[in-house]
Image 1 (cartoon, rainbow, N blue to C red):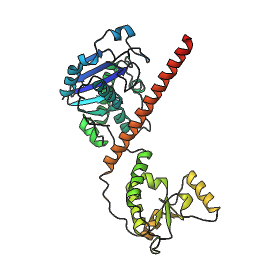
Image 2: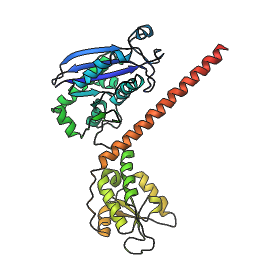
Image 3: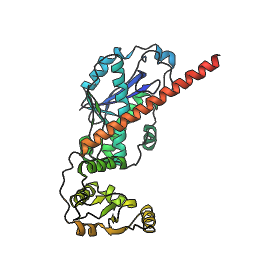
Image 4: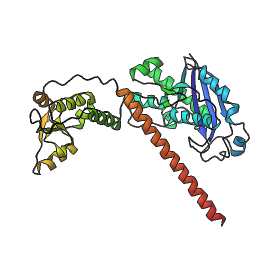
Length: 353
């Protein structure tokens, strides 16, 4: 097995202006023995050689190097001959490489990739992803941060540490934590994902389900026609599948689902509430329209058995959601960099007058 760990740096930090200036990599075997380590320095496209971020090479050296097309076949071969391709926050590097291919009108390199930052976050059960320098400090590793080949080496060591601490193979770790490798194709890029959904992603699943299943007949007065239900966060986000099955059952009985502010029943797991939920319930019951708290067991006694539903399409929906969210972040970042560039030019014009 041959593992390729790679990292890219650019002079501007933008994924869309051809500013890639280094492609660093490490090649290792299945036991994480490093076979080769190298930092390829190249001249950015156009005049994008003015470093705006901390790099390990000065402007003159970067400017004197060959452009990306001179290394394209070599880099492409590295990907083709590798069995596993990894990076840290690797989606950024995927974008840098794709952008360089687009600018020089070269075919995008097709490959699958594993994001070690996402894997580390998932294994450690961290709410927020950690930076590579922070993780390296935790592991007691000294290295030249933001030098591409060194970032690639530390990424490789982090994967080694994860597998050894769990006593699992790489495939074993991916299966245990439901990690799906990302895919870079000529058509689109699908990011690396895990089986852990954020609150926004859970809301995406819930809202999509409601949009596809909502029904209420105002003329029909039977079943749950006069009943509306709100659910505690513990039920909604703690077991999103059961929550959606409950929604389906309510709609089948002509009931409604909403928020505490506009419902007459509030369903909690066992009759306990968060401070926020207590406050909302108190405010509701101080008004004219009151709400009745019930447990989930009482809810089941009221509506009957919940329907069986196939949720196998969730993964594709989440992948789409993550692609769209990522694209919005990239567009926002590009707009920010564009604005900063305009402000800099404006300031330079003022200073020259």
